[in-house]
Image 1 (cartoon, one colour):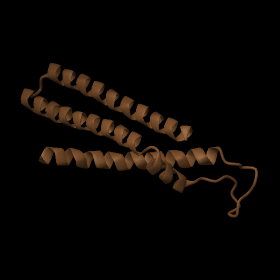
Image 2 (image 1 turned 60 degrees about the vertical axis):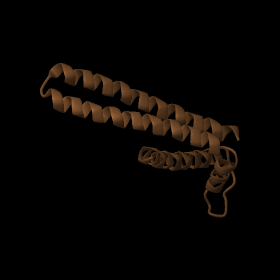
Image 3 (image 1 turned 120 degrees about the vertical axis):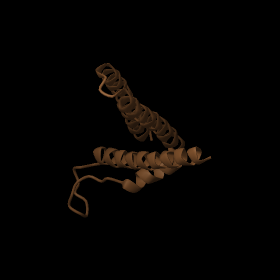
Image 4 (image 1 turned 30 degrees about the vertical axis):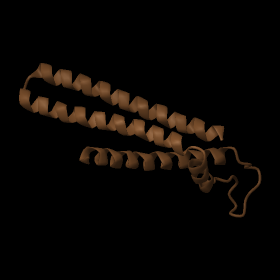
Length: 132
């Protein structure tokens, strides 16, 4: 029960981060596609609508953002567990260079996978914002 609550907490944190990224992406996209030839009331050409990103996120993309944040949370949990196991193995093996090399290779692969998933998720959010 405690593990599921901790996972839900991690998932909610990643959901808030992902929702924030989606709102920022929508604001950048609305500014990019706005009419910049006419100066507004503030004297700066171009409009960026943050509230539109919040509206689109709640109205159209809530499930997609939740799914993306779930994937990010699962990958983060796996990365954290493997990091804990690697530290315990390194402490148990002492100064064994072979174990250190294997641990470094495994952590590099996990870190590359984590970065790949974050890249794919961010590009999915960009595509979702462009398709609205």
